[in-house]
Image 1 (cartoon, rainbow, N blue to C red):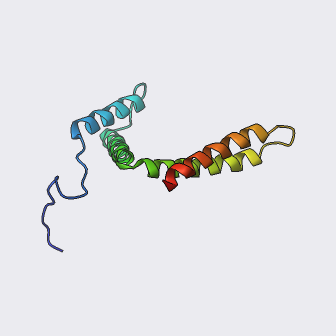
Image 2 (cartoon, rainbow, N blue to C red):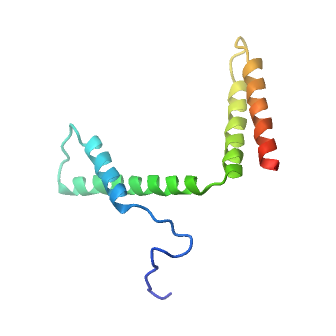
Image 3 (cartoon, rainbow, N blue to C red):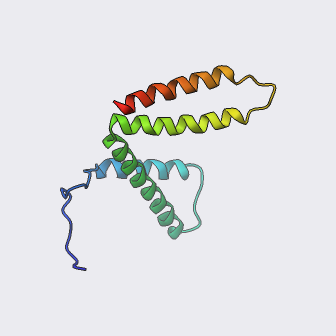
Length: 117
């Protein structure tokens, strides 16, 4: 495999603000170490590397969410509502579930109509 760099404007590669990612990583790092002192420098570096990795994952997730279409978002919401229906069914017997169940099923039906269009 050739070792050629891929330009940042390559197809499918989202442009992410590295400055915003780095500032988020520092914010996470400062939050984690606000009232603590790590044992040594290696602990500092390891902790910051975790924060930086978390910041990159957050930025990539936000970029992926921004690229989703309305139909994809509706399909994701339907999945969430189905899980909520299962949670409702697991409630104790003395709790009423009919109203919640009807509301969730109505929202699922509305989203299905939106997806089919």
